[in-house]
Length: 243
Image (cartoon, rainbow, N blue to C red; front, side):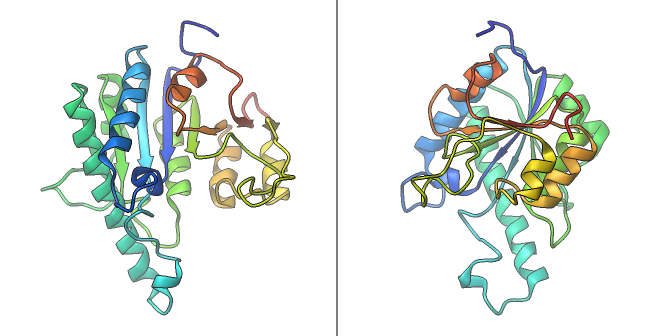
């Protein structure tokens, strides 16, 4: 592994469910503490970090609980859930002595600044961890698509998707013991095989802008740092002009 980071600027996508951990709470402070510890190791290397976090621990718009609800209303509730998570993560980052900024796709100036590409890039270059909340600001788009969009806008070197499994498999490894680990794929392989790591809109956006996607297990302490140092962890999609 290299002592120097292989990426200078990253977009890290985290699920909202990851904040809950194994507890019955929507946000587990121990999980936040571990996340920020891992982030600090990466920031100390000089890596510029943008984060998109979901809201599934608080509200999942397409769940059975939302059945019968208007899709636009459900998606707006989901966007607000991501803002709550962003505030919690931002606070945890600041308590560890780092600097965080929250930019929202929906204007709510009393809580956070509205997103702009220029502001995001400026704050990243200043060493702030920038958390992008409220998705794309539009219904019918997932936070995966928001992560791909923000990754392209901030000119990230890679989109890192932190999950609770070790990468991309031919099937859900938590349900199928015969699932095959796939360490390297092209964008088209992921789309054509309908591998549900991110939604197809997100992968298509990454393909069109040649933004590599690296999927790894974020729940293992230290994995984020190892990925940044070039360890053979997780699965990589695209990059190097792969289509």
